Length: 151
Image (cartoon, rainbow, N blue to C red; front, top):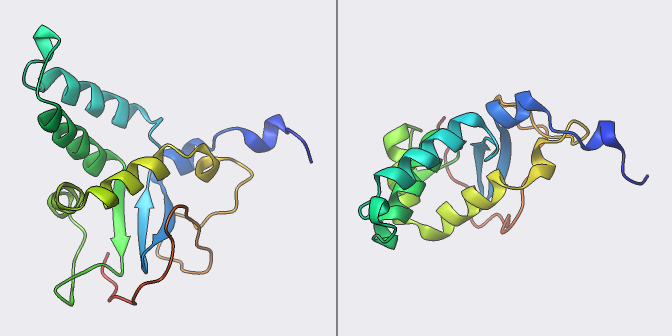
């Protein structure tokens, strides 16, 4: 097919409202890292990190602030997530906690949010609803155990 400018351009609705992506038996609603909301949150995170004004700083503190920015602007929902076998309802605080406690999960969310192919006009992805008919994702998408739904 080649490079089609119409097909390959970003779908702003997908970018801002997110697309459902699967990982480890659960589904996550992830927005694009190219949104204004994330850019502003990440900029605030960087500026507020200890030592930011002097050009130095605590890398761990900065990473935690970036994770908070991502958890509040990129991770918009989830389904089939549990904690100790019990359904885990999606909340912003729960998203921040999950991304802080699970570095692999945080890295996966950030990498998916940066993957422009998820947010292209021509890409067939599930709409930002709980419709399970069309799933997409990347990275480690293996189903490692079915969990209970909670959005």
